Image 1: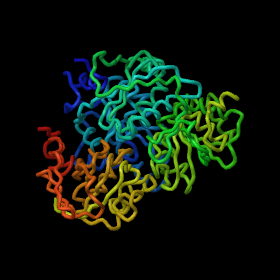
Image 2: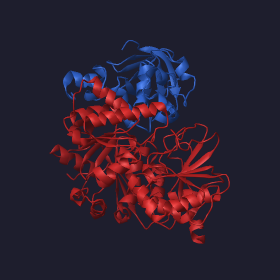
Image 3: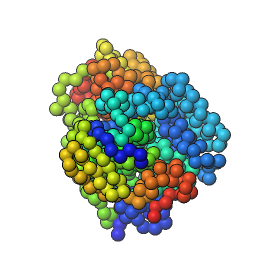
Image 4: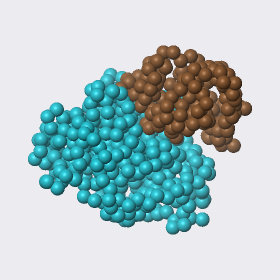
Length: 420
Length: 167
């Protein structure tokens, strides 16, 4: 019987065929934690009486959430991680490196790997055809300790995406549309597998949004096949040798299949306070914007900022609007510097922060005031997400966010692009 | 499990781990007393002040969605709940609950009202609603999770077996 992407990756690591629902204990190729999940993971390793790692080359720590440290407690947590990583000779990415998931895709993850991270957006790594999923600190700690974990092979949902993306729409719009359709629990425990000509035509940076936001529908993993575009991405990151092709079998069995024609898609907005509260721009009333936040593991790549800059070039922020941009990695930060992308944002009246999660987790660098509306490229609009339960978060594509910053309200970026 | 009877605290669908443990309290990350004091603060402000050992969190669908922050599950244990009961759970939160030794029970909660007097019998798979004189059955957890829960959480489980015990 044919296998889905999820089944194929797990089967290849397990050394035998697997089917959805089966419980497996599998070796894990890469295990990472960050400054919010790391301290508890270290405590759990200490609690088990651990003396050293069996596979230290598989274990990585990042500081990306409260980065650089926002409080004394955070600074002490950072020091603890820094010292722990140093004493065990582990790979460690300190403040300024960027978001774990983005750096992992740029530098660490290989197609076909099994990856466990102490963060829900670890599923981001699925863009390279790796079975990457988030877990809590204790699971991460024990996986670091044993070099393996237990999991159930997830049933898969196939999203066959076809049609040409209309001007002014982006992968973010497609993914918001999908989550609006299946709901925030529509893929719980499942593997969301994204296939079809529209996906095939997308470079890796565009594909990233799909695995990244799979967890917003509750999925265990979000997967894209590893193909020639994957090879290109790895080559551009000087690691073509890490490439291997992984495609689902033609006769794979899916729990459900969705046919999505994007050729008449409109820009989509996820309204407060759930990611499935999605509306096309034509159904939005007037929504004033107080802050725009560009970045995160969902849309913090150089291409995302180029799209925002295209809208912002030569423009000024509307009075009373703040624009915060935060590149997802050092690589993105450097590229943006070379290309003059930050100049465009700063000249428009915005600001640029150092690489990391920035304002997304509600820790610092852009907390909202009561009753304010934030239009952002981030992945979740939960109540309180950006530090204030009395504020509202709207999710959209980078270009839509930039257009909102200039207009001072949520507007249709297609009209802005036509006038440009 | 010392406490197995207490009152129901009800919650709607899609309670995120951000509502259980908001990011703005990040400095409480490694302080259990402070963590306990803010449990579910953005979902139900009075909960942390009034919850008593043995009480139940009772939710509609998809409890614990979003972030993997294990503190959200740990807070359920710090409140000494008998169990967290929901029609369904978000995946990572569910796994975290078992790992920190909190029974996370999937059952139809539509008959349970806030304040109902509940009692759980984990081994028998029964939740008794004394207020309504009703009993709800729930299926057992997968064996690996039952083993982890019986051992008192994942760290104790690995200490005892040296590995995952899936039998």
